[in-house]
Image (cartoon, rainbow, N blue to C red; front, side, top):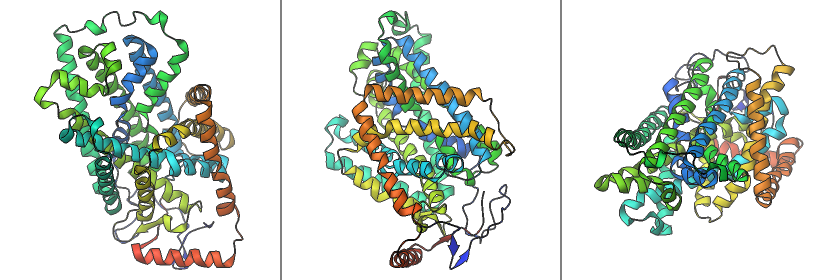
Length: 496
C-alpha cells in the first residue's frame, strides 16, 4: 500500500483537473464514466433502502412502542432523521466531488486514520456482512416457493442460492455500469410495485371500513416503557439504511451538483411514504397481537389476502434483497476504489477495466469475503458488534459539514443547508450510539475491539513508508501480474 499519485506503466496519471460535467472523457480514455442520471440516483438509493427492513422492522418497532399510533410516529420520525442525514450528505457530496462518500469526507476533514477505520469497518463487517445477510435472505424467500416455510429450508440449499445471487450481481457489476444501473432501476420498480400492491390492498380495505386495528391507535400508550423507545428507533433506522451511499458514486453521476441532492432527497421522501402506507396496510388486516407473533409480517398479510397469489410476497422480498445487494456493491466498490487511489489499499484496487470501464479489482475484492461470510454462522453477530460504529461514523461524517464551514468557508458549495440540520443529525447519531452502549455494552465493547484492529494495520501498511525493498518489489510484481490477468490500468483522466 503506497502513497502518492498512481502511475500507469511508470508514468504518473494526469494531474490537471478536468471538466467533470462531461462523460469524463472520450470512449478511448480509461476512466469511470458519468452514466448515472437522476432516476439512476433514485433507483440506487431507493433500491438499497428498501431491502428486508420493511418486512422485518414492523415487529421490532411495535414491540418496543406498544401501540399502533406510536409505531407509526416512529416510522415517520425515522424518515425525518434519515432526511436530515440526507441533506447533510447532499451538501458534502456536492462540495467534495470525489467518490467514496464517508471515506472521502473523513479523509478531507479529519485525516487518513479516521478514514481508514471507516473503510476497515466496512470491509470486515458492515458492507460485506450486510451483503452476505441480504443474499441469505434472498435465498430463504426464493426457496420458500419450493419448501413452503422458509425456516425449514436446508442450510446448504440456502448457501448455494445465496452464493449464486452473489456471483450474478458481482458479474453484472464487473462488466457494465450501464447495465448495473438498468437492472437496479428494474429491481427498484419491481420492489416498489410489490409494496404498492400491499398499499392498494390496505387502502381498499380502509374505504370498506376495515379500521378496527387503527381505532384508538394510542390506547395504552401511557403504559409504554420509555426505555424501549430508543430500541424502536434502532429497528426503524435499520429499515431506512442506505440513503448515505449515493455520494460513494459521485464521479459517475451526471451533473452531480443537481442530481445528487435531488436524488437522495427524492429517495428518502419516496421511501418514507411507502413505509408508512405499508404499515397502515398491515394493520388493516393484522392485529397488533398477531403482528407480534408473526415470523414474517408480509407473508402473514399475503396469506390473509392473496390466497393463490401469495407468491407475490416472497418474490417481492427476494427482489428487494437483490436490489439492495446490487446497489450496495455498486456504491461500496467505489469506496474501495477511491481508498486505493488515495493509497489506503493495494494499488491494483484503484485500477479500471480497459474494456468494460468498471473498477473490476475493487468489485472482485468483496466477493471472496462475502462468500466466506455465507459459510459462517457468526455474520449476524459481527454486524451487531459493529452497528454502533456505523452510526458513530455517520455522525462524524456529518460533523465534517460544520467543521469545513469554519475551516474552509471559501469552498464552492452548490447545495447548502442550514447549520441546525447537521447539528440535529449529529445529536441523533450520538443518541443512537449512547443507546447502543447502554443496551448492549458487551457487544459494543467487542465491536470497538474489532474496529481498533484497524489501527496497527493502518500504521504498518499505510503510515510506514520506508518498507523493505523486497516487499516493494513483491507488490510491484504482483500488481503487474494482476494487471495483465484482469486487463486493468489506472484511470487516465481525473474525474473530480
